[in-house]
Length: 331
Image (cartoon, rainbow, N blue to C red):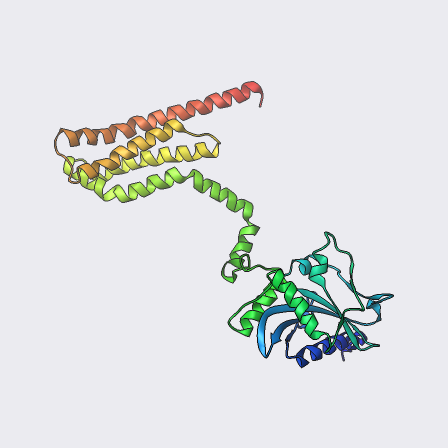
């Protein structure tokens, strides 16, 4: 059978003594389960005249001879330095002297905010007793500190206030507190942060391609209608040929951006072609069987035909010059 730790009785003596004192004076005590104890043993909501106040505190309780000092007591900071000093509610330390059956307290958050590095231990003065005679002064001092530091917690219900107090003792500000709906997604994004940054960069570089594709999708039925009203040529074949050429130009721009170059000339010609051919169905939605319509029908045939050749020759020649220069330099 499992055994009970000998130190548990000593640890519980302090927690029980403090809880009894606080509840005797009508303060609300929420004891923290040992499995969730990250440096505090209880969360307390002060009350006045039978009503809850917006002041909450978390308390670390220590009992036993090892916390006794020649002049008072001390509480170990251990790895709680940042948690206690950054908490949005006061973290208090209470030592229980089992021989005297007396409690003594210190404001850990206040003490640790006055130093830049962990002192290892925080002194608890023997002149700071916590008992029935001093509890009103204890409340006044802590409430004043919490008010000055804007550590009030307001909520519609005790459950909401407790949840907020738990977040506050972890140093979580409401403006930065996690949203459970997106917390998992944020963890996933952090795990693949570099890859996501690369994807975002490529999405930005592909903006011309995205805009061209969107423009073509919207304009497709109008382009078909314009060609059918202007010529006996296959409308689908004519529009498809023009669109494939514009997509090729947009892809060229995308890969130029990836290479770290800004393709001014290619971009200028792409927007000129896309702008002109997107404008036609607006001006002549039913097409034009006369010379005007015929001119643009032939333009839609010749521009891609010469454009493919010019595009290939320009960029293949550029690539050849680059490779030749690398070979000459021995790269």
